[in-house]
Image (cartoon, rainbow, N blue to C red; front, side, top):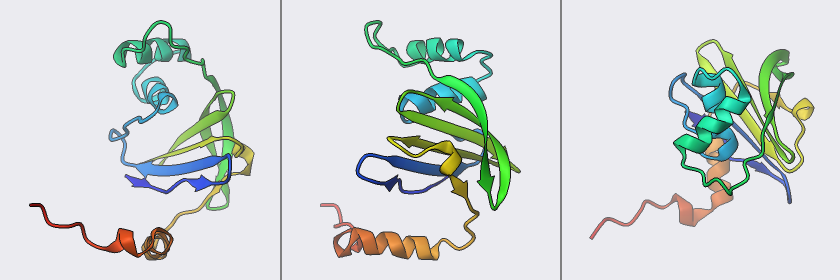
Length: 147
């Protein structure tokens, strides 16, 4: 899996990840519901939410907002690609499969689906160097040996 650090503004977040099919692991509620719905063979979103509540032992008194399903085109390398969308009041998650890679994009707090464009990154070195520059010298040093 290749996960990209979230793009943040004061109140918004945009995350993109790509992974081999079958290796996805939901980390928050909407991701888990999406994986149950799209990769778990569940026919309806209501069933996916019910299964999420059961599998993750969500207390009955905890509210789980029902996502709305749709589809939208997101440009990938300049061409429109159809993504499946789960949308909630303040967040959304988009998914598609290109060749043998699952692509998931999610956002909360202000990024709209129609404003997202994705490009293939063939050389990760500039991103690695940029991350190191942002994190600073303290994050670049190797961890202290155990003991």
